[in-house]
Amino acid sequence: MREEKNQEVLQINEKRLLDVSEVCYYLGLGRNRGVEFAKSIGAERKVGRRYLYDRRVIDKYLDEQAGYRHGER
Image (cartoon, rainbow, N blue to C red):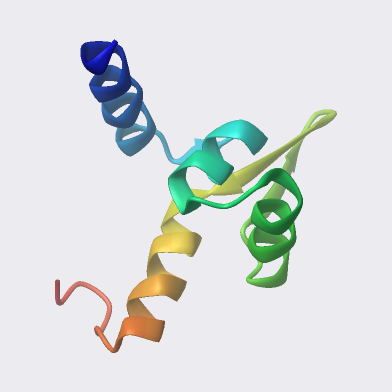
């Protein structure tokens, strides 16, 4: 079980676009709050009929809120 969770985290960190369940897991938020937050910061992208969320936009926003400059980490 623990190994499966590690694999899931590794896969999310390798992806740029996340689906709804992945973005909520990544942010540690429920479905409604996670989607609302991602939309509010401009991370939502429509690909065909699907809505995906750009992890780079999310990371950049969170870094700025934490006081990091882009690429400073």
